[in-house]
Image 1: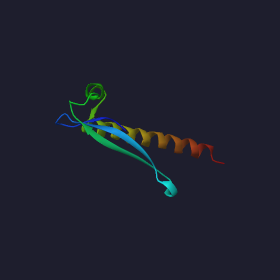
Image 2: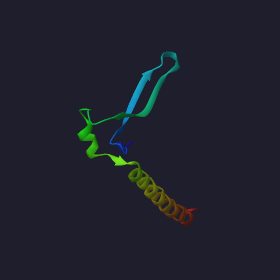
Image 3: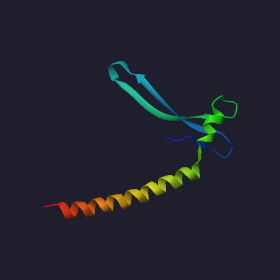
Image 4: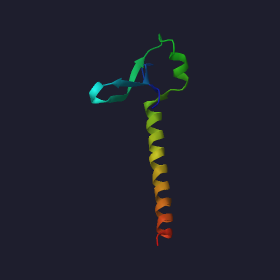
Length: 82
């Protein structure tokens, strides 16, 4: 999960929660919380943040890379199946 910088300067920061549900087991959740410039961690997190457009570009590149990797694997598998 990434720190996302919104157009108004607000940051969406990943936040994980682990809850003990008793007999129901544990609940693990990942979510985002929004923070503004008044938060003590804002400057540090701002330096590593991405815009929503930058994040989508990364996802697109990963999908394209995954397709290339899968094609290479399928070719290797076809050559090595007996």
